[in-house]
Image (cartoon, rainbow, N blue to C red):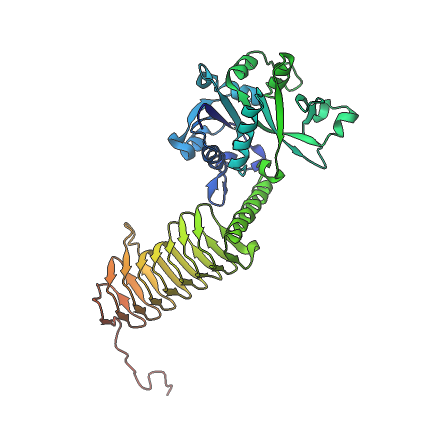
Length: 420
């Protein structure tokens, strides 16, 4: 998005997390909350992003790497002070700057886009994201004039009885005109009980200058929820999980029990695929149509399943590609593996893909029948139409059409267990 910059505030201590880690690097469905905030901005079309870091900044930087620029807040002196630290990146720029919170991870990119669009189309110098709460206690109230413009934000402790009845609250997410924000930042002070610089003071400064300000009410209040402790972390995980599951169901996927199904971001699932209970599907996985997954299935990262594939109960697959019509029924581990079309993988089969130093691949061709309790010691290749005898440990390649049996011949020692 041209002429738009984002500032992500990620410097807070998060003491209520009771953790040695920065709260910014705690994960929701496998992804750090600060990374989610940054990716939400990128998905909204914003490429120029500044992360304001402070407490345990090395942890945050290890997550975000070079995907953002950095500003540093060494003293925690309020939200206005945090934005001040990014001033050097704003000087000489025109357009809009969006201020986001690193601990608000499930804000929809579409909401960010709408906020910017409203600010531009209404020619507002400041546009706030707001929400309607039936119980707004503890939140700053949005005071509007008769024309709907924002006059002020009044904090709970400063609100009179009439203002406390207002249900529209400040969500703490803003879109500012860059040049007017820079001017306002030079005027805000910390002359308050907390001794901090508040970004909300920018609104009053702009209003006093006669600059137009406004607010946009978010459609889904869950989007603006933040993470302050591990209870809230679990709540947001549940909200995002249900949101992702709902999107897949709208696209034609059958999920039998959304409360026990965990589907991460960036997963593609075809129509009429059935997901049974207690299934986890991690990121960068593609599943075709008319597949059957679970129950108790664990599909890890970077898997690709073609149409009409069956993944049964107690199956784990990782970095594995499975061809059309193949069956992986139950109690199986396939890692770093490629399975061709119309194969049957017997119960108890595993790929021994790690030798303690390196990960190696197993390649199984088309129309292969694998007997139960087979071990594939990678690297190994199985040709098309091969049969693997049950209980085999396969350490060498198997040519096409071959029957491979790799086990000791049975020996019966009669009367071995007979007592005298």
